[in-house]
Image 1 (cartoon, rainbow, N blue to C red):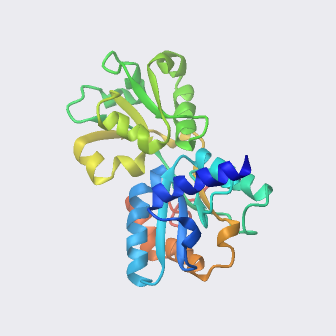
Image 2 (image 1 turned 30 degrees about the horizontal axis):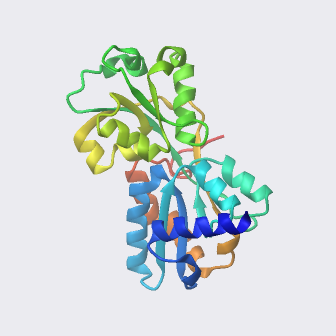
Length: 265
């Protein structure tokens, strides 16, 4: 069974990255990143490689829960950028991470997003989701997507969960959730602010920021995995993330950077 799983993962990662992982050289960094990082991470990697042309970054995007399962099965990532603290902590307990490498890199936010031309009334706040104009509401699957859990928490906080659960469409991750509402498969969606303010989503729709008091802080944590332990290229990459250029990119995509005028208990 282990051989079958390993072979299957090799096929998956060959398809994702466009090469066989077994032939990778030392200065390549394989990154597993939560879907809400798609646009910010793309810019970060581009800017990083401008300064470090000999280091190549390859990124796969998906739900944090699915990456957790893949890493447990042996997926050869160097770093895992999770959308919450839970999965890195579990990986550390299982001995799959380099010691003392967990760190909060950003705090995320959620918004209610609708396409341009939608008659959904943001003046009603999140109560807008019970409108007859919203027959399908999409959120990420709360079972394995931290942004889906935040959406569910907020809906329960406002007493809306029972009223909307019959119209919910679940995305596999927050990126797919945004795609559902962007393509019209849903009338409204609760998505990450970082996706809502990406150029395409911003141009094609509008959003209302959900008060962060209605859901638990979405503290996003990275952890260096065993495969990346001791790599100098990874230290350089993480220093870039925490540096001025990396911080500016994350802030531009709506992330709160701890130590930049914000604090979390």
